[in-house]
Structure formats: C-alpha cells, structure tokens
Image (cartoon, rainbow, N blue to C red; front, side):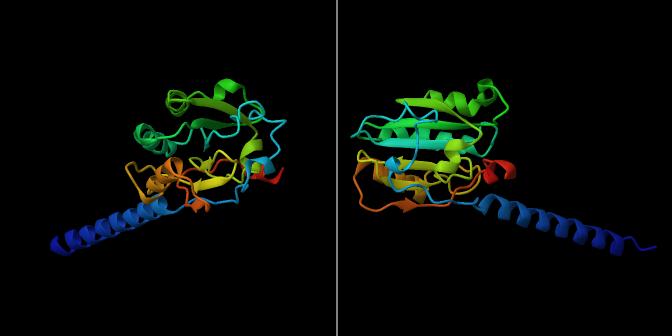
Length: 206
C-alpha cells in the first residue's frame, strides 16, 4: 500500500486543525467583552452603601477607577500597562482599584498577584466590591475596564487599555487615557474592553 496518500491526508488534516485552532484563538483574543454605559458624572452614582463611600477623593482630584476580577488572567496585562503609564502621568491622580468579590466570600478571596500589583501603584487603594454592587452601578461587565473621572467628577474615559485580550504595550486606548489624564477634555473617550466577564448571570439579574 502506498503510504504517500495517507501521509498527505494526515498532513492536510493536521494543517486544517491547526488553522481552525489559530482562527478560534485569534477570535477569542480580539473579541471585546460586553460593555455598559458608565455614569457621565460620579455624583449620579449612589455610593453611600458601598466600599467607595469614603474612598472617593476630594473635588479637584482626578480619579481612575480600575474594575477587575482578581482571578482574571487577562487583567494582568492591564496592570502592566498602568505600571508603564504611571511615570508619565503629570497631574495628581488617585487610583482606586475596585476588586469584585462574590457575595458569599471573605475579603481574602480577592488576594492575587493582580491585587498585589495594583496596591503597589502610587496613590492607589484597593476596595472590595462584594457581589458586584459597584460594577452594576457603574455599568461594568468586564474585568479590566477603566473609568477616568476628572476633577469635576465628569467621565473622561471609559474602556480597556490593552489592544487585545492579555496583550501589553502601548495602544490607541492607553495613549488616549494618558492624554486625558494629562490634559482636560470636554468629551469622553470610549474603547472596547478585553477581559473575562465580571459578574455571574444571577448577579446581573439582581
């Protein structure tokens, strides 16, 4: 029996499987998550019964809210982008990392390398968002979404700062965030977010 047709068919099958896998991987890494509508002014959000009640900075101080799922591997790239951008931030800026935590878990559940890295950023703090209450009020559904509120409490940036899922380096969205931190803008920059889903289906419906 001639083995060449068999080898050829095997090669074609393996090539097809590899091509399908590559397409699926590319689609997954470049497909943004579900986006919601963030409040245009932070004063539109009820914070009195949340972990942000005493954490939001005084008027005149821009605030960067970083919403994240402590177990999401994609968000590591978001943190590394922030680490590289921070030395280029000119005005005083407060960074508040909002860590999703299931309602039936203790605060220690958020402990991860992402939480540790975010807590080490200059002028940063980490707050626990039990049951995703803050995520829902700020219209956040995907880990890694960043919201920038200027010193007047107006939304200046909403979206992700990585070019694809889990990818690092400068991107149009990260450079737009940098520009909006360093100079005032009347509009809001909106970008897709590449990361894992933040809330479970039942939490979204509550």
